[in-house]
Amino acid sequence: MTRWARIATVALLVLLAGAAKSTAGSDAPPRVVAIAAKRFEFVPATVTLRRGEPVVLRVTSEDVTHGFFSRLLRVDGDLPAGQPQEFAVTPAEAGTFTIICHHFCGAQHGAMKLTVVVEESAAK
Image (cartoon, rainbow, N blue to C red; front, side, top):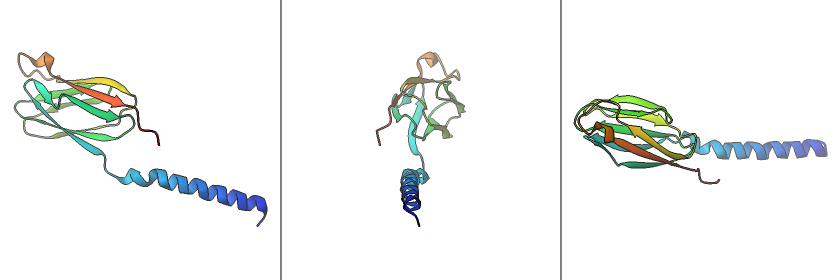
């Protein structure tokens, strides 16, 4: 084997080892964030996520049917009472986002909001 062939082989092995290391954690299931919906609030009222991290928002209504909507986070669904609903989210950008109840649930329906804070990913 020539010197350049050995160098190319070593470089390829280094690249493959780095790729294997970076994908090793990708088999782990996404983090699940439990959220309760009830007149006229989400509990917790604020959720913190990381940009690029896949998560599942598991939301359960404790009383009546509520809605769960954010165009920017790409979530949209109804929350029938007592039936957990899951929303897969992978935030593409950092910032503060609002998820609203978009299913009329009573007089203070307009105040029912969940704040989602998306932080930058930790440097690797």
